[in-house]
Amino acid sequence: MYDKYLEQIATEGKLRNLKERSILCYQNYVSYFLRYVNKNPEELTCEDVRQFLLAKKEEGLKASTLNLYNSAIRFFYRRVLRILWDDVLVPRMILDPHLPTILTLEEVNRLLDATSDLKYRAIFATMYSSGLRVSETVNLHYDDISRSKMRIHVRKTKNRLDRYTILSQKNLEILSEYWFSNNKPKDVLFPNKWTGHPIGVGSVGQVMRRSVIGAGLIGRITPHSLRHSFATHLMEAGVERQNIQALLGHRDPKSTDIYLHVSNKSVMGIISPFDKKGDENE
Image (tube, rainbow, N blue to C red; front, side, top):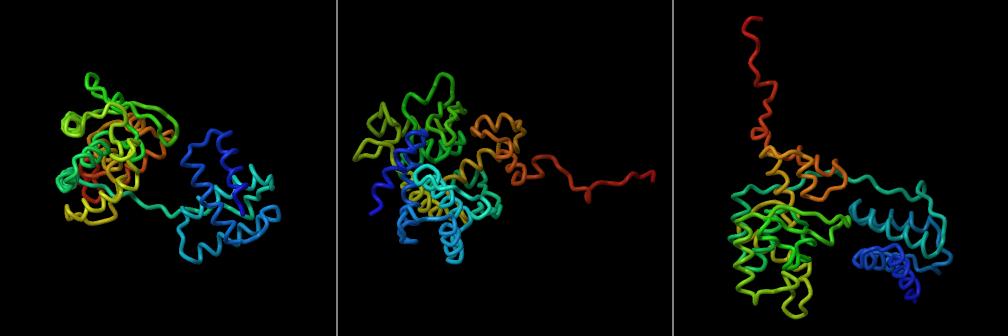
């Protein structure tokens, strides 16, 4: 019923050079919205979106998820239906801030020890030691690993900003062990054994959950926690923020500043004013 509209979303997305994953997400969110309102798309209004988002909020959907719906439907209205979008009537929701979960080095090692599959152990080690996103890690190619320069070339990034990041000697040893024991892949570094394409992000999350349980770790720990831990540990070691920003591939310095809030204050050398000694001469 809505196939032609979903195809138009794909066409408009390609014209704007959106990533395939973004186009698929837009199609999925818009498809759900259309089936929910059950109206002729040509008769839709911003009030329909407003009522839809309010209903979903009442059902318990998080603000971040609702904002994804907002972005997808906004794209659909403006680029496909050519309907005027009203940001006042359909505003984006304010997100509830939360600090990321940070693992200690000892916990990272426990996680790696609890990961029996060498491929996934190499993936987790790479994410932590180089600060990569899970999507960046699974899309690595053999030629992206520079042993002579001890760096990793990161392509297909979230914000389309290619960058270089550091390659740990310990991680190189894990990667080498994995590479030799998995038929020396020359193209995709972490291929799906059935298709040869990069393994799915979802598979990494599933293995992470099993490893977290196996390591006896507590808390909301996801693959992205390894990237957070990389950045926080560098900040605690005194690495300048602009260097951490470059390694992470953040466009906005504010994205890097969050690690100031989760780093260990004693390692950072900050002393509470309550602990300062007063002037003995006063």
